[in-house]
Length: 181
Image (cartoon, rainbow, N blue to C red; front, side):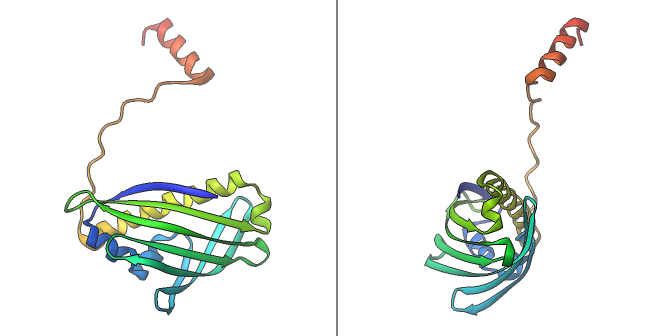
């Protein structure tokens, strides 16, 4: 599985780096995270409960930070065991790019492999679960950044209505045309 994306954080690069190394803040933001415990220099034990499709398990794992280049980038190596549910391991490359005094773009590229029951449920479901976890993490992480650093969220710009598609959309467009509404 490969997951590559970027997120805009509402803080400067130094604050973003500090937050990415704050285990209390990370524990609050990681979905299902029960504990992050330092086990050595740049090494941590983690306990996370996760549901991937019909498989729900408590995973115990290890995280290690490598190639640290503060406040710009690092590599995160991870591995975890979920008992009968299976196991996973991989790495993520994290890069921070300043976009102004109160904005940082976080780029990430993660590669992971899974085994056991998790692997049996299909890569599409695993990919969807990983994407949902990333989305949930960044929503919680941005909220935690806003609380910690007193940053107000940017007001959302009004979005134009999405065009109707498919059979229902065509039916609605036909009715709209028919009744002029």
